[in-house]
Length: 111
Image 1 (tube, rainbow, N blue to C red):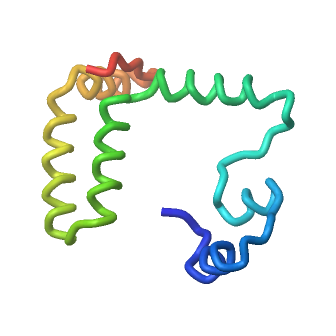
Image 2: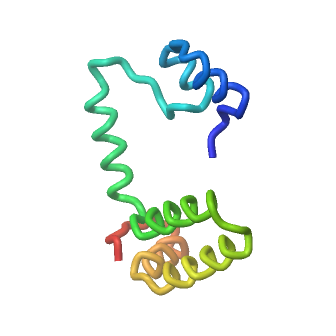
């Protein structure tokens, strides 16, 4: 799920040493580093981007990631198949297919 690696994670937990934002980004702990005065604007932009996206698919992704961390592969694959089947029945999926065929950007409703 992330690129930190077991050795570095163990080192950080055992030694408790400080690290800066740039190191956290290099290690894959954070997605971006922004100046303090731009944090709110960056957070709001990310929130807008996520809210405009396929929120039903995001929920399925989160469910699959959580299950994948603790379940055997056959259960993970079965859950993923069921999730794809659920998503295939949504208005968002229908609209995304129509947008793709029309070569336009899709809009999502969360349904």
